[in-house]
Image (cartoon, rainbow, N blue to C red; front, top):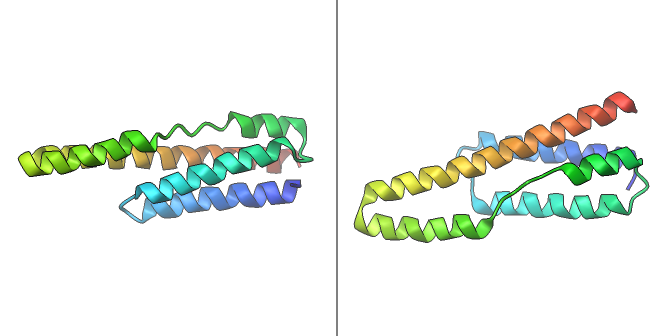
Length: 121
């Protein structure tokens, strides 16, 4: 991977996160797909010809998202809906908030890294 490819990918990820955020409802599939792509990007960057400082910055990107926790929340949502609809609404809202914060974090981290790379190039 070269510097131009790295910059294009970071720009793409920031754009995708922004697009999902503007789309309203954020689905788990989007978040899981994006975090998996970023994990693959981090692995590929380790063996690339990028400067060492960029590799370090990429390795510092942290996207903590546990699909199982949110998926368990989905089943809680079903149970809560069957018993008390208001609880279901709160759980759903909390999961959406977690997804939104993660996408904002992804967008902010990738955008700031892209700016650092552009300024140093």
